[in-house]
Structures are given as structure tokens and as C-alpha cells.
Length: 335
Image 1 (cartoon, rainbow, N blue to C red):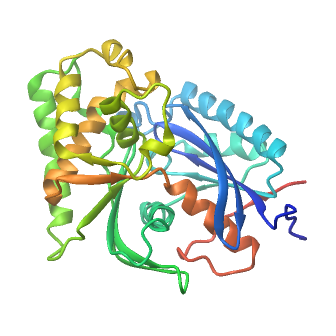
Image 2 (image 1 turned 180 degrees about the vertical axis):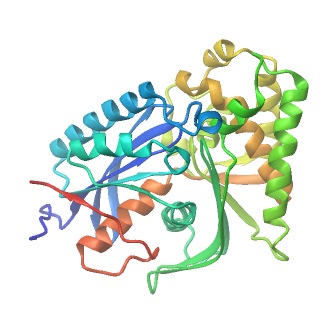
């Protein structure tokens, strides 16, 4: 195919990430492997609801994701994206009826891929590490069904990443909510049990390192929402949130604040996306235990998540280059 470029040399791509909680689209323009600008569209589709208990997608969840992707396809076409990539993560890895959803997505002209946790972690690391060239960092992506943690270094001079360790743990805010919480608000022993279960697994990961990176970075809706809650951001300000530091004390304060509130009361807190309210307590527990287990008092929040890594990888494939992350996406192309 002949690769179309804008007048300034940019290529337009679309990246779609279908997560356990959110379905997200990034429409990006790239030049020489660098994202020049991008705009995002995120929808809370709660694809992973009940998957931990039943091992299957609910029919209404499949409908929600299909509807979101139909809109994403229209937006990608209007944007002029020459290629689109679609990935599915934790919930799709767990659900026995994932093919039901994949068939719906193929009918929309997409080429969906259910990616392993290691690939998910590498893509996220690649997206984040562009802001920390040459620095040894730890990157965590706590999602709805799993948490990926990667330690490594990105060297932009030779376009390579040195990943020391990547791990995908089945700990996520939707999974924790479904598995431990029965009351609204949850009872203290339910919160304590969720925290203990998470901490034990995170500690096993961190204990594999004799020398942990000094900088800890996290992505995802939980940490960006926590910053928004701390500073009561209305409207949400991505430029303020990106690369903002968040302390363990601030997370603990928000966790304690939400622990006595019902989901409906959390929904009305200033700075929260209302549809994220049912998973915010569990997400905050995960972040607290992740930091405690790793011995971190502060983390840096990044908005350059898996979608940014996907965008860079799509561009590498379009340019005929070998993908830095070691994974080749299947692409759907503009007709």
C-alpha cells in the first residue's frame, strides 16, 4: 500500500484499547515515530462485569463494547486514519465466550487481537518511557482485571527498550470489586481482605528486585481520577494530570474518604467520572498496596499509556520497521 501523509509529513492512525472497564480510542498523528498530536475518546463499557465469577462476558457488556467500537470506527474514518489497531486485554483473556465479541468487532471491519499480559505491559512501558529517555523506571498499569508492572529503560538513540522484568498479575479494580465487596459501602473486613490479597501478590513481585528503580510511574483511570479527586478538577485537565506526582498519603486520604461512602455518594464527588464510581474504592486499594509493597512514597502519573505504545508500534509497522516491543499488530486499513 502507498502510505498517505499530511502536508507536514505526519501519518494518521487509530488505536483502540478494549479494557475490562474502559473502551478507549486514540486518534494520533505521528512523524518519524513520534506522536505529534493525539485526541482520545474513552467510554466506560464495563466489559469485565461478572467475568471473574462466571468466566463469561455478559450479553449487555458485549453490546456496550460493540456500540462504542461502532462510534470509534466512524471517528477513525472521519479523522482519516490510514490504519486501525484493536487490542483486548484481561477480561477477554479470561472470558470463555470472547469469540462472540470478536465476531461482532470483525463485522465492523476491525482486526481485534487478544494480547497476553506481557505484551500489554511492554506496550504501556513503551508509551510511558518516551517521557523518561535513558532512565531506569518502574511502570504499573492497574486495570479492571489485571495489573501489569514493568521495569526497564528506553534508549531513544537506538529506538530500543531494555525490559528487565515484566509481570501481569490478576489484580484489577473490577475483579477486586466483584470478588470482595458485597455491601455498599463495603464492610471494613471486606476492605481489609481485598487489601491483604493484593498486597501479598505485589510483595512477591517487588521482592524479586534487589535494586528497585527510584522512579515509579503509573497509568490508567484510577490514578488519573485520584489526581482529579485530590485537586477537585472540574473539568478534567489532562495537561495538569500528566506527569503530576501523587503521594501515598494523598491516596490513603482519598481511600479513607471513599470507604464510608456508597457508590452513589462517590459518584457525586467533585473530580470523578460518574461511571467510574463503582470501581474507585477497589482501584485506590490496589494503588495503595502497590506502593506500600514496593516501598514507594510517591508516584508519577502518566497519561501516555498503552494507547501511546500502540500508536508508535502501528507507525513502525507502516514504515516497514521491526516493532520495538517485539509484537506485531494486525491492522485494518482505510478502504
